[in-house]
Length: 512
Image (cartoon, rainbow, N blue to C red; front, side):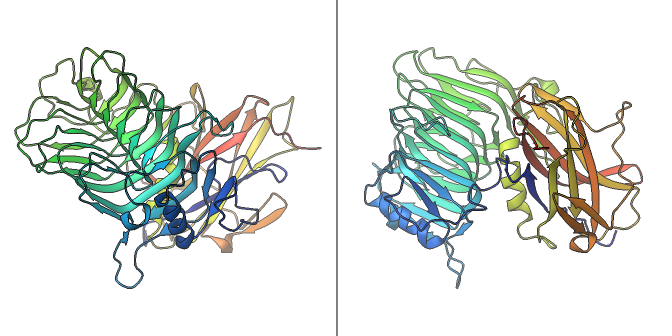
């Protein structure tokens, strides 16, 4: 092989001009309105727009009832010296956000939030997020963040509450954080810090399909208690309910102090306050983090660090690869020994996909992660990946999805290459295009050109071009997810080159 193959895939799932693909920007084919804070839906497509958005938050605009669409990648680093942007001077301290941010699978990076005010609440998007009674029917919440990656950023803080997205979820209506990837380093003093949210005091908060991949570094300056979690630092009020689902922790938690630990956990540091009413649920989550906490061997766990006043977290289907866990007690949750190791499977793991680098990731963030990991690689010009519902192959209300794939990268002496496709429903994995003896699918024909969707695609747009069909798709069974991995085989060894997720709406029919 002359060089490692790179399968950079741009997915367009089209049914007669309608795009039922959750990972595509909703603004991909419409004219983007100018940034206007008075609009019900606000569009950010530049660093200047993002800074203006931050200034409005700093000026105490909560954006209640509004949807913020981020429709481009945003890089705030200085183009001359590469330094991070001083974000605290823009959004200020202790501000509140009550709207919805939809990143449409875009990346925000280059933010620096440095603060020495101990009584403040810090987060890169805002100090606090608070839900209201006005529920948006599309997002099923009044406040939250969806489909966004924040990377290459840093928080240095002495604040009371610290989180990469928000320092605190305030008591109010429901808040949802979904399909979010965070790779932010946080350095804080010993109080409350979480990889995504510092503190939750809300009665109904959901964190789903999220990943924290940064480092949390905790010093020993303050005399206050230490609550630290890879996802949430503290689930604090008597009525706080927190659900963490289908999420992963790939970062590290480092504590170099000597003060007592109130709670350090892989997902939640401390749960509960004065009564047994507050509740934490952790479902179908994976962690591969490391603990570096010196000789502090109490009040910590690979899932939940400490649960106060007889509050008992509900922990199901959690896989941890941390192999040096302390003696288990009622506050420490360790996956069974047979599930230790990154190659082990978590029960009911249909929401996770193993990407080419080996990490299982929630389906919701796969496209974000591949975009981040491949953004600086060679041969990263987007190539072809086109899905098409076939009219000629529709029989008795069952249809066929025809997928045309293109791959970049020079490859020689391969035995087979193509696409491995797994169809997933809400009930779990249903179908993979492997033979009955579980051997891998083989695509032996590499085409010069392929006709699909009214257009002819030529091999000169990429190095390899091939086709696969998924048949027998029933109508009106909701949205189906197709995890598509490109691969090449050599000497009976399979190498996965890239992965993408297609969402296919079976309620859309093709006109005859």
